[in-house]
Image (cartoon, rainbow, N blue to C red; front, side, top):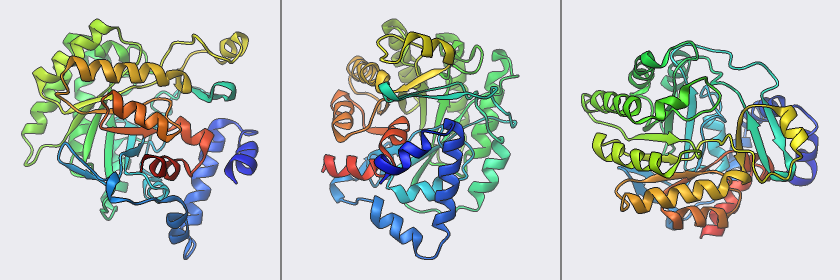
Length: 342
């Protein structure tokens, strides 16, 4: 139904409008008596062989929803009906911000890819906290992806991450430190060894001061060199955070099927989907080998099928996440992947 009816209709709309329309309609439909049960039976797939216990958390399956889909925590309870084993909310910043000017989300159908330059548009951490306060906890694992405001200079970035970390701490199961989005000016400079070590060490110190610490992951760009990846391994082992999410979107535009003219007209932004699949798997394998498997890796980038997931897991990932793949494959993607894995 999605591939032959809904997808052609949605692809006639602006991508950002299509996104908001579909999630709002799905959330509305879930409020209809009996609909929640129907969606769960249609899209969920359960099997004990899919269970994972990693970094102290129990996952009902290894497929999660990547950050960026539900920035403000408005729809994660609805998205749970689609069978995800975990959902990552954000990226959230201390203060609300509108993000970059529209249009800022683009489809590349011939590449099964997206380009976005959203710019951390979100309603701020306080609004997210208020929604999470009202959530009745289930077996769904929730991650909090945190960033800095665009107006915050890098030398004060630690303060922004601290605010988000402390305010979200009671309400999420793990954290993701996002310093790898290409859509906030100079944010990726925080991936350099000195500022990254300082940031992660500060958050880990705050973590250790809590009654019970929580896993902290670093989300990295796929555009890092091997020497930079070597630094990442050393920093993680030195600071003691939990692991890595590999990877965020790329600024690389090589080997696209989409015409150069169309890509040029779209302009700046992070590329996700099939074109980043191979590079993200390479990074997973490199980090896993270089670290001797000393920390868990969550693999993301170009996942649409069970085969894609198996490639990430074989390379060294413990869990995976999808986003762009759902745009092209539809709401049945998780069930399809899980059945394929079993």
